[in-house]
Length: 362
Image 1 (cartoon, helix red, strand yellow):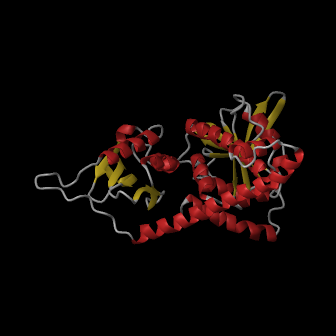
Image 2 (image 1 turned 120 degrees about the vertical axis):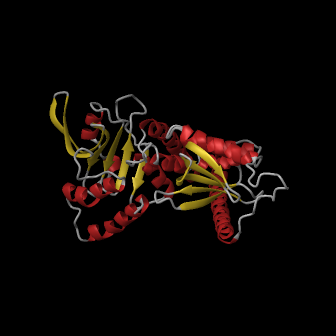
Image 3 (image 1 turned 90 degrees about the horizontal axis):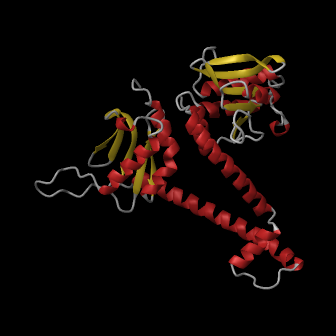
């Protein structure tokens, strides 16, 4: 069962557990939700060499400090969990034990959870000191594909400290900007209103309070209308692409003339291959990433082994192009791309797949 299936199965249990009042204590929350969540990440919760409950350490004058769970790798903690009772408002809880323990271990990541919501912290602001705000929040009640892709970075097969730290910084800044944009959309500031009116040439007069009061709700409605139209267009495009993928036969490569090689690797395929190698180079040795061209598509495999597929490039058509990515079960998912640059939007999927083969013996 894939990780996302395990998470959805766990999510479906929450309403039943809540209704039966089986999440009334911290211990119940751990057993019913937190342990299965850690298990979904690929860690064996029954192996103390891999998942250590109640990890103890002395923190300054405090003796016997405990953190609820620590994920262990090479004998050292890499990910810490502090658990609260289900339903706790985590936004207003200070993760005291997690905060203190974070500074005396080599772990770069800590998680505060009530079993349903998981708030991921690091030390992006100050080295070896846990940030006050999380860089990533995963909610079992609202499972979305992009969030699952981020969560996979913390799985046993995909865990890479440097890659996660880089990604965490990006998520932090994106989150702050997104939050600010959200506040502007719901409550546009005077400066924002003036900027839009000036840049759009919608108004060139003097900005009095009455003018700002008049235009503020109009700008709010215009922004929401634009967002709704973009969402609608994306949905229509997605439905159209699904129809194309399901019904459109692959365009064959041009038939070679006599004495020409049967398979021709195009410049676009070569460039796409180099992009893929650049994306996964921090995850796996690039020398193991090999291109194997065919008449229908260009395969990118690990160790030149078709049983270790990284992706497939469908670039024969001038109008309909795709990249085929693979899940943990090696099932291919074809995704449309309009340009080679679009390959970068699927970088996380490629790194996750490459991580499955990171060990030479994989």
